[in-house]
Length: 209
Image (tube, rainbow, N blue to C red):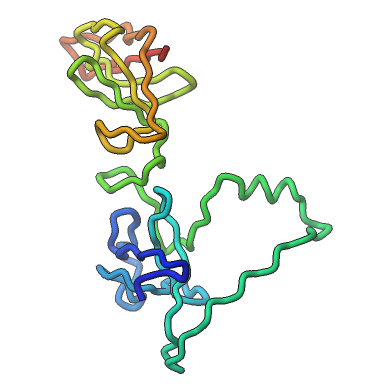
């Protein structure tokens, strides 16, 4: 099977959105590889796979036949909604632990790192596209309305009217419903930055309008 119970198409296990290429992981024994068949490398109750949904990485169980009986196993019924909390459970603590966190599988999958691999839309919301005239630089949002980037992008002392910032852009020069554009009010170069030694103190911060 290459689809989940809900009908989502599985990603290949070699997708660069995640990595299992750990020397300690027996990929052959786990049944992983360049295919997208459902597997259970973490010994879950039934095979599953990863898929992309709403721009995010998610996973789901698959409805596959049992190897021993040859019969298709029906999907497990959904658990009944809880109508009470045990006396020893702190309701606020439960919400605090789960709110805003995506459910993750067990740690046989290593977390993604920056290093040339694909990133999911929205996974790095602090990244900004900074357009200085015809030039392009990347920056980081460090607090509301303030960003930092490399000072050499501003080495020619451009006018603030020629600079605009784009946030929420996953693909360069492609806007979506979450993309926002801003002008800037001012930028402040590091006082010791010099175009004659551009690798030192190469930082500038600027305020969006």
